Image 1 (cartoon, rainbow, N blue to C red):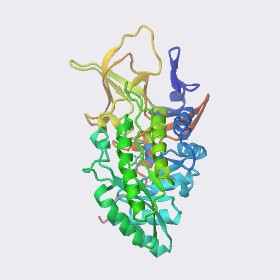
Image 2: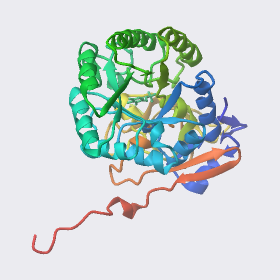
Image 3: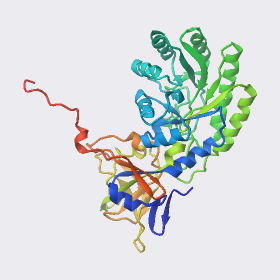
Length: 418
Ligand SMILES: *Cc1c(COP(=O)(O)O)cnc(C)c1O
C-alpha cells in the first residue's frame, strides 16, 4: 500500500501533493489517508469473521472523521474515558459496540456508560467491580462485565508501553482473578461474561500474544468449570508497525491461530482492540523548516512543529522517519538534528538524520497517525495543529487549527479585591 509516496520529486498523500496541503492549511499539519485506514482495517477484518469483533482503540487517533470512517466499516470501539465514549457517540458509533477499559474509571464515567448502555466494562480491580455493582444497583440495571487479567508475559517492548507484567498497574493478577470472578458472580447487578488482557503496545512478534492467549484459555476453562459462563475473550491491542526497518508483524497468521485455538474451547467470541495498527502508518505530520542552525558539534534543523504536536520521540525516544516534501536535485544532504521550538532539550523529532533541507522547506514526519494528535498539548501556549484527511485527490479539513484565543478561554483574572 503506497498512500504516501513520491511522484517525481513531490511527496504525495494519495493523489494530493503534500506541499499544496501545507500551503492551503498551514503547518504543522497532520495528514491522514482514508485508503490507508481502510486497508489497515481490512487486514484485520478479512481474517476475523462474525461473531468475532474488532474494537478500534480510540486513544490512538480519536478525530471524529477517523471514528466515523471506522464505524462505517463496522468497527466497535475500545475506550479509556467518558470523553472517548462521548466522541464515539458524536462520530456515529453505538455504545453497544463499545468496551470500556482503563484503571481509574470515575463514578461519573461509569454512570454515564451505563446510561448509554455500554457494550462491556473491562474491569481492572476488585474495587472497581464493587463500584460498578453499586452504581448499576442504584440504576436498577445489569452491567456487562469482563475482567482484565494481567497474564504476566513480557511483551519485549518499551517499558512505558509494556502493560502485561506483574509490576504494571494494569489488570488483575492471574492468581487473584478467580476470586474476583467468584465475587462478581454473587453480585446481582453484574453479568460476568468475559475476560480480557492487553499486554502492551508496539509488539512485533506473535509469541507474547500467543503465550498470553494460552493463559487466558486456561483461566476460561477453570471459570467454566466453576459454572461461570464466560462467552468472550478480548485479547486487546498492541500490534506493532515498522517505524524503521523492523520486520512486520504477520497479523493474519496470529488471527487464524487464535481462532483455531479458541474453537477447541467452544462458544467463545473473540475480540481485539487494535489502535496503532489501524492508523499509525495512515498519517504523517507536515512541518516547515524555520531555521538551519549550524553548530560546532551538531547542525540543527529547527522546525515549526514541537513535542507538543508529536510527543512520541520525546516520551519514548521513538524513531520516526523524516522525508522532504519536495526533493531538490543537486542540494547536498547534511547531518542534522531535527528539533522543535519548545523550550525543552527533549523537544526533537530525529537525531543525526541526513536531509537536504533549508529554511522554508517542508518535511514529512512519517507514521504519525497513531498517538500523534491525541497526545498533543498546548505547552508553550502553542495551538494544536490542523488535521486533514485525503481521499484520492480530495482533501477534507477534519479539524481546524486551534485559534490562539481559545487557549485561554475559560481562564479568569482575580477580582479587584483579591
Ligand atoms: C492502548 C490500548 C489499546 C491499543 O493499543 P495499540 O498498541 O494502539 O494497538 C488496546 N487496548 C487497551 C486496553 C489499551 O489501553
